[in-house]
Image 1 (cartoon, rainbow, N blue to C red):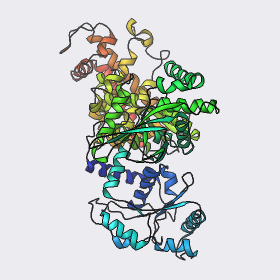
Image 2 (cartoon, one colour):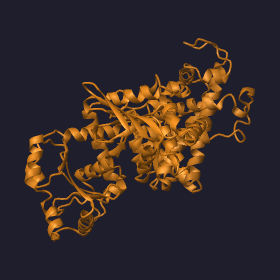
Image 3 (cartoon, one colour):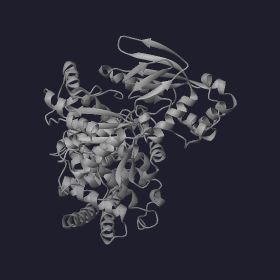
Length: 622
């Protein structure tokens, strides 16, 4: 279910998935005789991640796809949901949607089902596969066995029924071309590992149209507590709120006041909670209405995150709180043919209270795509990875869900990264100094790269360049010889100059030194090591050279800016007399670059060129 407007098509999804499989192959080499994952194995790892919500590293351990796998490519023991997922993949690199093999699908699990009934384990299985088969058998008495056939090829409904009849597997699931495209879209929209779950209700009514169905239900708050508790125990809180533009917020005073008010109502006037609360909205792919229960397939909460999390917190603190208090719950079933409606619902329902553009765009595929690409990379060959924080409250939700993840990531705020991309990649420092509302409003599509934009590979570089430029300067150890009252203590200069200095460094490196992708990768590698181990001699050397470049860039920006104060610049509406006004204006960067092209402030230009030359020589040697 996509968020907001989808401006990517099925071919974009397929291209991105292939790229994701390639990243999986490079991240998780098969631990058997040093072999490397195949495309099919990477496809299987991704499927387990997307469908079950388990991390790649865990999913990779469950892949049995080898020459003598006896028809079973993966086994996943889902203890929480008491099921064993047994899978086979028929991969097609072209994703053309050709016809899948009926014979392979019908015969693939024959040896496994024979083993479950006879205990006859195939001799050709390797040790890992034997262990997994045996574990599956020990669970088969009390767990459901779910057989899954996944393929980018196609099967008709009649063919699927024929395979079920031939194989004797009545609960045989087929995840084929169109379903995989849908899962791929969910992946690009930040919806991974969403659960099927039930919601018990006291009263319910349905509202139907030709394209969607909605249920409006009276639900006991204790039911919502149990729903959150289940997802938290399964480490799927993020999945529960996948379609929500925010996660749980409890750091600001306003959020805490709202939380306390909700809890006070639940404690002192539980019967009034239904009247005092706006309610909860859920969206899902499919619903099944039963007696007193409605089942949701791949459901998530698109509005009401604060309500359900405060309900959960209340019952954690007051286990004997009134279980009969109720809340209004709206459940909307959205067919895959109108997935844009999911984004419209999230936008409209979250706009009832103040929500900025950043929140509303948190599930936009551009941001989620960038999140996946960053998360794929290790930091300096360590176990740490990059984590792009898209949603308000996302970090605290992740840490609550997975406390062991503390220290596992380099956290990058989406707003900070947007500024870095604007200044360096888009060469527009004016946009970088705009407020969050503007950056994620009218500038969003100009800044964040599309699925097929090669600028993705430069985003880390822009962020590290910003970190180094910012850290390169303190008010106590630089600028002492510059006699300029306006920049005393840098209160009127450094912040806006930071973005222009970044843009200028990147421009001069590319123009004067052909600073291409290889150099950028080396720069990022050095910056990562500098961040992880700053006391290493090579980190000290890198810092000294990089900081010198930054210092010279600041000095060049200052000298040129000083010459522009009080002058009427081309296309400027005002005459700028302070650095703040000048450097935050839309014409500042262009005017500075123009002056540099005229060989103005040549001494400072030469200093910057020389310091850049030393940095380039260092990166070439290392």
